Amino acid sequence: MKPMTEKSLREAFAGESQAHMKYLIFADLAEKDGKKDIARLFRAIAYAEQVHATNHFRVLGTLNQPVKIFKLAGMARITKSKKCILLLTQSHLCRMRKMQ
Image (cartoon, helix red, strand yellow):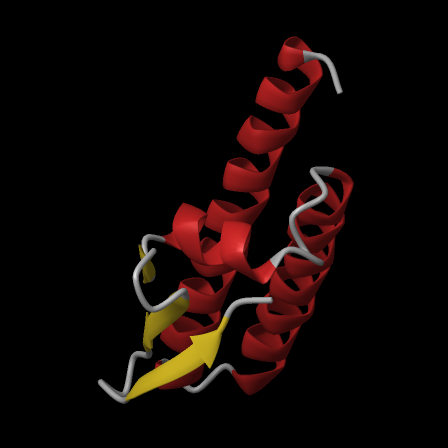
């Protein structure tokens, strides 16, 4: 993939991801305001943005490469001596997964 194409895809992924979160926030606000139908619409739009972001991520070729995903997300530390990845999940659980 050409560098300019990759840059454009990464920017598109970022934009779609931000839109996804924005619409989820709008849905929460609408629901708190008692507007459940509007909240449902915002959640549907958020889902569409998530699909778009996932497609950009897939084209970038990172979905089938867990090590690369964890590096990009800043969620992993690779230790050469043990050849493992330490994953820190949001629930603060640690898990060791051997690299192949």
